[in-house]
Image 1 (cartoon, rainbow, N blue to C red):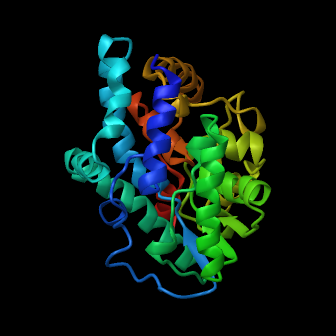
Image 2: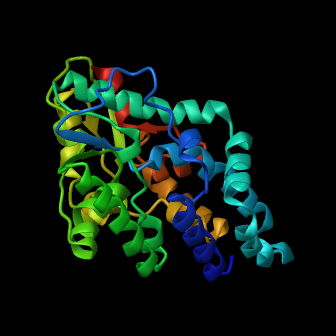
Image 3: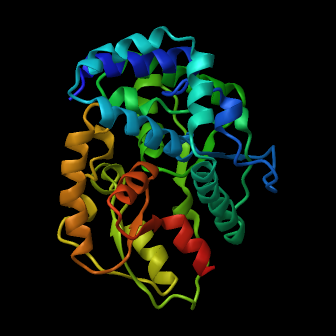
Length: 308
């Protein structure tokens, strides 16, 4: 296990100086929206929180964290914060697989198509789409989280944005629960799958949903994606630990201990695979972590888009 303080300090330093945990220039990080028909102005902002965009970089950094965990080099991790952010962030961006970046972008493009099919009016402005800071909160840096959250909330307020469509559980929880509590700013927040309004007869398949902790236990929204899939003719085969009693995939622990993360992952995958059905994830962190196990897993948006 890495020294948690070293990891927290490194992530906090990146967020403070670059507004994201990896120090990657936003122009390199967030490109999915190019060549899409999304409108640049409107009443309701599609707010990705950059979480799906992070997934290829999470995989790359975890690869190195796994290599050096519990070695003498682990204690030197903290010195990486002294490397100029532009150099470190750009280097990470260039080392990361272009294929994985395209895969992450395709999820967001699917969500745009799903919203369009549901006749949802929304707009997207990349300069208003920021990381929520949720990892700082999860790791115990409440002061750093509040400082960053106030920056994000103030930017949205200045732009006159009050309605947001989110795409992942971490950002949704931050905006719905933490932002009002710690920044004093409240927004009308809906997840994209709450807005799905079409039905399909192209289903007939069976899947097992892995409920993310934030959707299942904290926001108690697990019934919503199940209703969406039922309307598409897709049956959800349940495991014992699901919905409000869901088990973690282990992904959030990766930054501190990849070994611990894998132990948690192995237990959860065994549960999910007990149904014999393909696994559906509703979270970029869960999606990336479950894929490492070799299990048959895809994102909810991919399944919905294919059923349209």
